[in-house]
Image 1 (cartoon, rainbow, N blue to C red):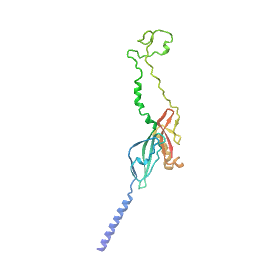
Image 2: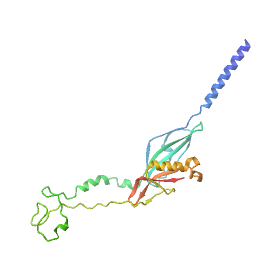
Image 3: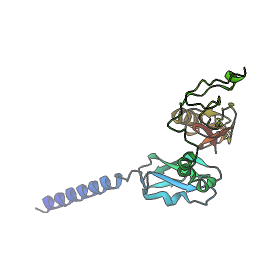
Image 4: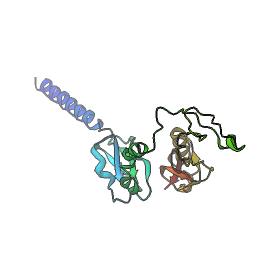
Length: 229
């Protein structure tokens, strides 16, 4: 009877130890959630990237945010869970230029300015005779509704200045490259780092920033550059 009791107690202790061992092996995986899907900050502001995080499980390698230049940046948070596995979480941050706040009313004012232009009277013919047509001294008129040989024409709207890109860009990252799509830029930059095995990774760079560049006409929201750190 004593032997049976001893065996039962030994078996129960082994099962208890095995259960504890299984619980210890189940370590928490990495997880992170943001307060917002996209974030806007002002150019030149001091921002702590930790403030964008709502909840996190694991050890976090926080990215750097450069607010000295306006444009869109993608921050990458690398989280290592208790199980040793890493996960990368991305957050898009739009750095708003300071001068944009001073021109907020410009789009709303434009229609009012257009309404101040002289309107062509309904009784006049909208066709406009080029100036060269009246250089022969003729007193006639090519437009109906004229009086005394004077041609009635509608006011010519002022010519609008149209900027033509010349192919030059500024605000380039240390990569010196520009990309005409976000996906192309991201794929190239990831391959350059490649967890330390890519060309830039072997030079000691561990991550990168990305933003849109400027050309001679202003900011190009469709052209990207890369800056490694």
